[in-house]
Image (cartoon, rainbow, N blue to C red; front, side, top):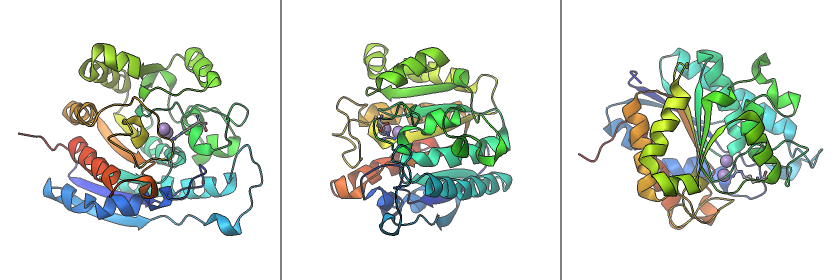
Length: 300
Ligand SMILES: NC(=[NH2+])NCCC[C@H](N)C(=O)O
Ligand SMILES: [Mn+2]
Ligand SMILES: [Mn+2]
């Protein structure tokens, strides 16, 4: 990454899942001084504020298998345009969520500009469901599938092109809670998944070396989609779908530092921070520290 400009885009999206509070994620991350911390690293920072997300009180769920599809689609289209514009202006887009359904819009914007993009999906989950396989109907559990071209056409064809990314340039890091149909899909598509088992066995350094290699080969660079529930709930308690046995704070930091060293990062999003479920904004602070690391902050 050579540019010295960062564009922050807040997306208080909560319609991709069931729990209130994740809409406050962007506020919580800003309260943890994301802008000031990035400026201290020498970047010029532009914060575009939040994209409007409607409140569910006045909405009805038309399809329980794809909850709030029209609204999720609309917000993601706006997000895609803001991400595209930031890249056109030579800036690094930093998207703050909001639930993980916003990866659909971010990846639409990033790949519209760069075409061949590798993806590192840091998450306890696969987010590889479709309306047929989803146990919840929550679109945040479908966003990786959609970006690979699998799912409802309203989402898959966003920006009038599909797929956004290819399975052999996609890696998942930190997985430990996959639905049975997601496991089948991973095998069918041949996506490289670094489960917690593998991180335990060979260590985060070896995992990230391989992950960066896969995601950067034949691409213009890497998009990082970082779901805070990839971390262990002890280190990131403020998330809607916590799963025991995640990466530690240090493992996560190492992963981010290695990504910065690779100089392959094109864009990033940090999602699923839910301040209602957090302890004294700890999870948002962790997100800010991870953001500093991808932008080059070093201990020494
Ligand atoms: N982005 C997330 N936190 N996703 C959790 C997904 C959970 C579950 N697999 C589902 O489809 O509903
Ligand atoms: Mn996720
Ligand atoms: Mn997750």
